[in-house]
Amino acid sequence: MFTGIIEAFGEVSQLTKDQSNLHIQMKSSLASALQVDQSLAHNGVCLTVVAQDNEQYTVTAIQETLEKTNLGTLEVGHLVNLERAMLMNARLDGHLVQGHVDQTALCTDIENEDGSWRYRFEYDKGPNHVTIEKGSITVNGVSLTVVDSEDNAFSVAIIPYTYEHTNFHRLQIGSQVNLEFDLIGKYIKRLMIH
Image (cartoon, rainbow, N blue to C red; front, side, top):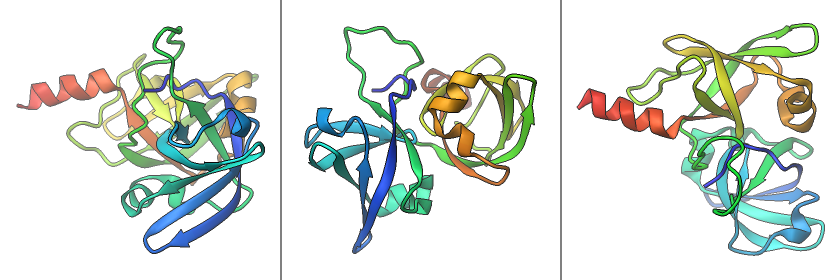
């Protein structure tokens, strides 16, 4: 489990195809604190550390992950939002995040709001994909509050701290992001359908 509070960036240093898998080598200030077999969220995608040294580590994404997330579009030099798994005896500053991306979305608008930014995203509507105003959403692993909610779109407001300390400052109109809809909302929606 994660909280959606980003700890650091990772910079993609090497990408290696291995049959249908992709080995992603990352440089990060977190590398020396990681261990092999540890879970780490990458733009909200839970991946297992398979190799590690003091400056870099490696994770592997399988074909399904590459198809359902934006990790298949990574290139050397890209910045990725990183979060280690939450400690069960610590504060929950964001919201409960599984690290299981539901789908990707496209950024369709970015508005500078005199000191903050409003980002709008469109996604494929599905039976368990729901946002509500003032509800939680995870975008590239970042726990956020929905500002405007529509059937297949929503907006979020980004403060300067989040803008600078996540990869939101690199997003542009047309950028693909990973979405994880609110865990509780997904279960409630599912119960209402059946």
